[in-house]
Image (cartoon, rainbow, N blue to C red; front, side):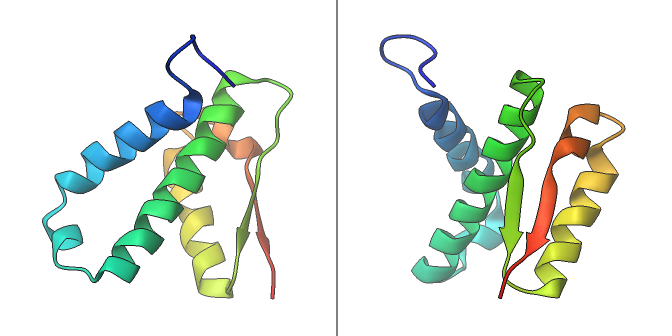
Length: 96
């Protein structure tokens, strides 16, 4: 989705994630692999949230590799859905 000729949804989300993580002291102490993984998770989840909020007919699916990850994401959604009700349309599925 292009918001204008120069800025895309991905650009906005990437900028937001970079800002959040640059302010997180713990993030700076992680290995490059851990940082890349965390960055990807933030990007994925914020993209799902943005699409659920921006489009009434979109029901994002987030895939988790293990049960604990699935529960963490479901709990995060549950804790925020009173502020952003649209995110209750996000489904978290477990894949092996």
